[in-house]
Image 1 (cartoon, rainbow, N blue to C red):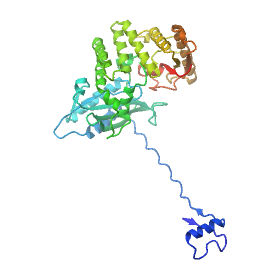
Image 2 (image 1 turned 30 degrees about the vertical axis):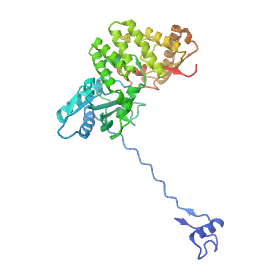
Image 3 (image 1 turned 60 degrees about the vertical axis):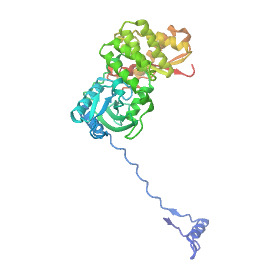
Image 4 (image 1 turned 90 degrees about the horizontal axis):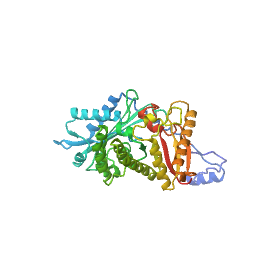
Length: 412
C-alpha cells in the first residue's frame, strides 16, 4: 500500500488518475513511502534424529524398507543384500556384518514375502531386488567431519528390473557398543582411494529417494560386485586359493578395474607365498592410485616416532610398498605430494608436526629408491584435518586415519 506524503495543494489534485497523482508526486519530490513487510524468519532446520541403540536403529530402518517395498500379490520376491559399508571409506566392518545379520533375521521372521538369498553371481542372475546400506560416523549435524557423535544408518532397496529405488529407511545410532573394526580383507588391504564403484554404491543409498533411478555405474557393476563379495568372504575364511581365483575372475569382467580387485590379488598372492606375484599386484594397486591421482597407503608408525610400526606389517613389507610407489611414479615422471595423516587423539599441534616429519621420512625413502624423483616430491603433514573415520579410536577401526597419502600434482 502507498502512503502519500503531502507537499502542497497540488500534490494530488481532484480528478487526476492514480497514476497521474503518482507521477506528479514523484516530480514534486514527494516519493511514496512504501510499507515494507517485516522479514520472514528463516525456517529452523529440522532437529537431528535422536541416536538410538544400534539394534533399535537397525530395526527402525529395516522395518521401513521391508514394509515399504512393493511385492506382487501371491509372490515371493528374491532379495539379496550387497554387503553394507562405511559411507566414507567403503569398508565392511564387524558392525555392518552385525547389521546385515539382524536384517536377514527380521525379514525371515516377519516378512515371508521376501526370499533372502546370499549375494552371489547366481543370485544376481535372477534379477532380484537388492538392498544396499551405509553406516557412517557423523557429528551432531550429521556431517562426516569434526567430533563424531553417532552413526548415520541408511538402508535402501532397489529394483534391478525397473532400475530404481523402491524403499528407503534412515536412522541414527549411538556410538556406544558398536565395533567398527574392518573385516579381514579391509583390515589387511594396503591401499585406499576414491573408487568409482564404491562411490556408486554409496550414492545409490545416500543420494536417492524412493522412485529415483539407480546409478548406472552401480547397475553395470553389480555382477562384478557379487564376485568380489564372494572373494572377500573366501579371504576372511582363510580360503586364499578360492579367493585368488575369484579376484582373478572379477578382474576379467567389464567392471573389474577396481581397487578392491587389485588389493585382493595382492593379499591372496602374499598369503599363498607367491611374493613375486604379490609385488606385481601391489604395483597395480599403485598404478590404480596414480591413475586416480591419489592413493592412501596404510603405512603405520610407532607412537610418537618416524619409525615404522613393524608389528603392523602382517600383509607385506613396507620397503617393498615404497619401492613400488617410487618406481611406478618415476616411470610416469609424476610429481607427488606425500601427505602424512594422524588420528585426532592428543595435541593438534604435535600431530601436525609429527605427520610432517613422517611425510618427510617417506619422501626421503622414495627418493632413495628412485633417484629420478629428486625435486619431484613435496612432503606435507596435516595431522587429523582429513580424517576419513574420525572416531579417534587409534586401533584397527580407524587405521585409515593414520595413512600416508600419495597424490599426483600437476607441477613439481
